[in-house]
Amino acid sequence: MSSESKTLLLLKPRGFCAGVVRAIDIVRIALEAFGPPIYVRKEIVHNRFVVEELQGKGAIFVDSVDEVPNGERVIYSAHGVSPEVRDASRQRGLRVIDATCPLVTKVHVEAVKFAKEGYSLILIGHRDHDEVIGTLGEAPLVTQVVGSPLEVGALTVPDPNRVAYLTQTTLSLDETKDIIEALRQRFPNIKGPAAQDICYATENRQVAVKHVASEADLLLVVGSDNSSNSKRLVEVARSLGTSAHLIDSYKNIEPNWLGGVKTIALTAGASAPECLVEEVVEFLAGKGFGNVQEVEVMPENVRFGLPPEIVEAIASAPAGAAVE
Image (tube, rainbow, N blue to C red):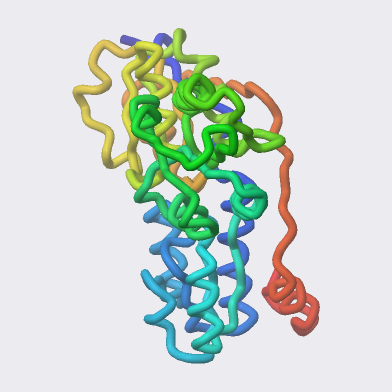
């Protein structure tokens, strides 16, 4: 089969979202401005390559703020933290830099608002995900987590007319829609957020996959296996009948996946760096997929501002310093 007959569809948008760019920039700038060690609670974003690169620059990743020496700087990951974690940081005198994605912060604010108004909260998401753990911590006494339409049937609330729902930002649009529909059937007066919680980047990457699913024999998603939004991209493709696999890098590509394949679609989760995508493109070119076509489904120009501690660090850096 000639290289001309084998096509690689490079999906756009792909890879880093604005929240991930912001979170990684926060760690890098903190390391440059203040010097190591800089402690980071949990993985700053769910990607092994990114975490290992930052470790090499002096970032120390910990599971709990209890592991951070008193008075040191700690960065909260993009997935957010519960009030309990914030309290623990204050008690230890830690200098906190918050890298929580603004879209996750929006969900936290909504949770507090609904709880204060006396609603029972249903949080749609995956119980063990860092983001859900943080959001749940805002109103733990009135919040229940559901991960499927089936679980909706087991919910019990004090007042079926005072129920609200929120969602994890990195879910599948279709999966979430089914759960919300089940909630509406169970609680006809249920309230939801003013605007959907699912992140724009999560939605855009899923829409791009749907756009090319019928054209591709195989979809490859660059992303780590603890990345929720990356795993959802694989699920979206498979739900449409397209073979799909999640890969950390080109090294994970199995030779048998490529047998009889003429068109591959390639994308990346919101926490996967572009350099990994480029390596996959190069690897597949060597396997005959030399006809690379970039497919842009929609433009993406979102940017988020940096937290005040980082803005101040940049402003006070000597002229010509590397901080940017």
